[in-house]
Length: 222
Image 1 (spheres, rainbow, N blue to C red):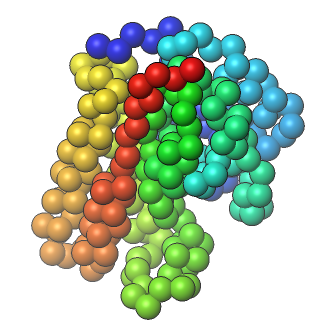
Image 2 (image 1 turned 135 degrees about the vertical axis):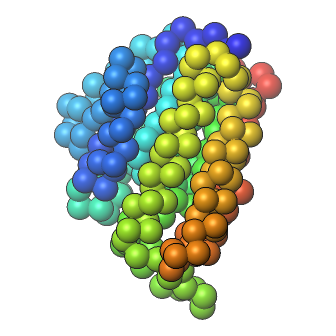
């Protein structure tokens, strides 16, 4: 069992991440969200900086291989909430679960955390799908309903795995096993549904996400 001084779920809340508010109903006591307002951003950094090691930090929102973005209702995502330097500062000696795009690359640059878990490219909107398809010869044929289904699956899989961690039934290092288990169950259900037009494309998207899950342990964070 992993013992944490504190547990916090941080949601970078904007119109594109509203669906992740299910975390609030599932983890009401430890859920916190913040907006693009400067005071809101600074307050969230204050909360992060006040955490005692070792704590568990779960971040929900948008990201890149270089950082975690602040909320942005214009969808431009130019400003980082935490870049590599600040992430190493705020995540020092903590376990971190980053439900953000390309966080599997970002955690390679974080050397101060204890355990870190990240994901690959998460296509969470039709706009992101169009961007992803733009420079590819083989396009992903998915509609908005498919993407909503995809979002709900990885969100619910994450919630289920996090509940096991918080209850002490599994350790942080076991999270990838359980995340892949929950995703595999949903992939099988989708592929068996012969009536679903885009079932293979949706299953492929989930396969890609499942295979992108990465965990890293810094042996001597300092």
